[in-house]
Image 1 (cartoon, rainbow, N blue to C red):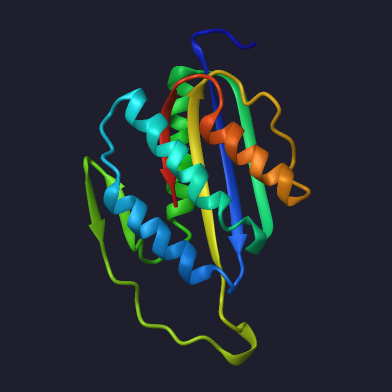
Image 2 (tube, rainbow, N blue to C red):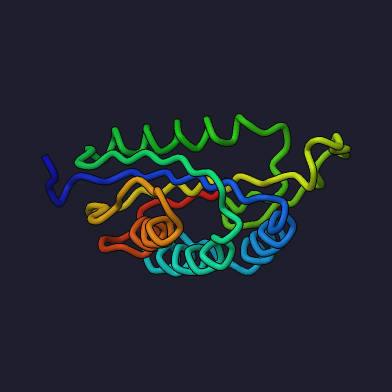
Length: 168
């Protein structure tokens, strides 16, 4: 059951094709460097709104998504599940190129790699993880770009204060 003491957890992964890969990565770098991630609901809500606007600009290049939602989760369980989800997403990558945590931005150059001819220009997967008070009312499995844009808005700009935000 959902009560004011419970939380909702949401994850939305979007794969962007080679036509927007470099632009998406550049915008995320710029956004991570410009955000001041204080530990306050207002700062997190502002960061989430900027992230929604940023990713929405590139949805024409989105070609694959994955999502998961949990609602009515007690606070301690929500924190554990959020941390596990973040660690699982981070564990997919050998090197995080930008990490915005503990009040600062740490940037590491990615390892040199060379794409094979059949890989084309490559792609990038951006995963947004959110914990908030309130439901993700109206969120639907993203089957088309308008629904995906609506889901981004619900996840990142919906009702209820954001308690945690991570973009991997």
